Length: 190
Image (cartoon, helix red, strand yellow):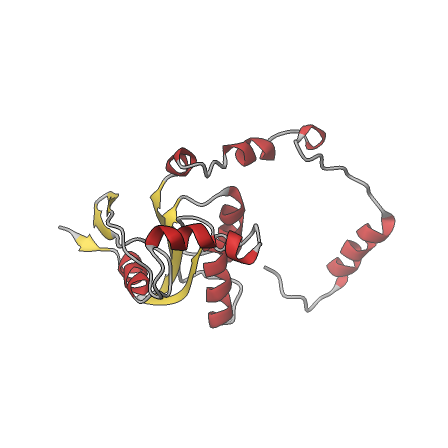
């Protein structure tokens, strides 16, 4: 039996209204895999699909759904905002957390156009959604010059051997802040 995944339908509808980036995907679920059909669409406001992608940052979109309602959405905004952290998943997580007034998305699903990069993966784990459903793999992204393999390799590289060296400079005052934090009884943990 074929059924449409609600998050991808909502993502598609948002694009049609020009509110979020995504091509007009026909995402359908066939157990146990997601089948993706593509057909390009224009974005509201006169921008063509590829122009929109080029001006904002890349072909990545994300929606966050709770109880069949979109609570956060985002597209890659790296170029538009000059913010290297403005990936679709990060933008959507920030929007969802702001709307829901929480920093954890435990009862939400994340629908994204591509397997998240290492930065987005970290943010997703901090947000703690119920699940992540993605269309393209990181290898598909690498094929269009969005290659995160270098970052994956750097994570497991010795700190001083990384391309950007990470130098540990311990200081007693920095550690004291952590010690003081431990003593606070009414702190909210995440």
